Image (cartoon, rainbow, N blue to C red):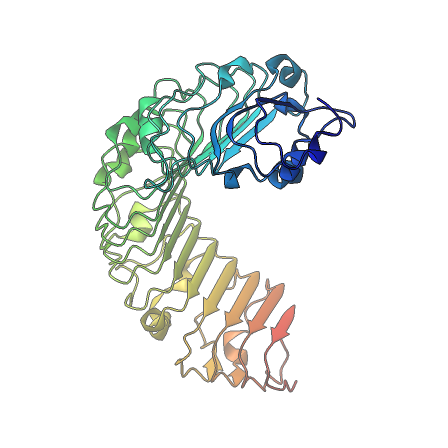
Length: 424
């Protein structure tokens, strides 16, 4: 490629542009050829080492270019230890390049290739059949992509958003898939039950999802389930109780969710955030025998725990911004929890509590105590603290009226934050 090509500023026709390397012609020099029209082939793209250089070429603004061909030497790419390819925001792209030739490709990202239908036809060509070295795959914003994922035994956690059909067509080949993110779907396909290696499943931002299919019992490796932003989902499948591997369940902003499965014996961690219609009808101490962590956050309508109390193996409890539940805190039965070592309570802005804690509220096993967001709290009660001989850290946040600690002594304080003065 002539070194002075960029000086031909009035050039109208150029059929081939060859990207040089090691000080040769850069792709960014196309910026100085604004009047090109017709067809243009750009060769040796493997020599583009700087993304900003490619942006300088400003090819997306070339309205007079009717046909563009991008080519690189797959042998040169296979010898590159980085082996990374990213295709992004190609609104007029109707097919993928021959990625299957890149047998050493390790990092493949396909982003926003079909986000705006009015500007972009269907991206319909298949992905490569086999990429044995691929360890990272991201596909996002390609809702019209109709193909199967490549056979990639080294890939475990692909980032796949808005392309659930691709996953469904590929369940037979995703033998190493351990993590899956599902978003913006009306229905979860039963084919996902074939993903026996799946360890983490994230279902997020599905405004029309009403139910989950009974596939969880088939996911024999599943340990983590997150369900977030599904406002019309009313329940989780009772078949979850047949899953013997699930350890962590996180549910957030599911406004219609009324109940949880009655028996999840193996569950170790349960987080419930912003689920105002949820009724904790299950008897926790008998049906959640393995539960060690429980977090209830921003659930304004939950007013009590089930009859029988909390699971006896509970070691960590967080209750944040649950006005009605905090009001009946003496009914929690914390003194019956011999393994509870961490407690975090965050009040509501309208909370009127002035003294904390009452006698016989906290268990003697506590090692860490966090008190936060009680705007009217004025003092700590010695009678409720004197038996906490194992307590190592106490954090107090946003209790602006707190002024008095017990004269008999203070708990171990690791942090005090608030605008009020503190008198010891």
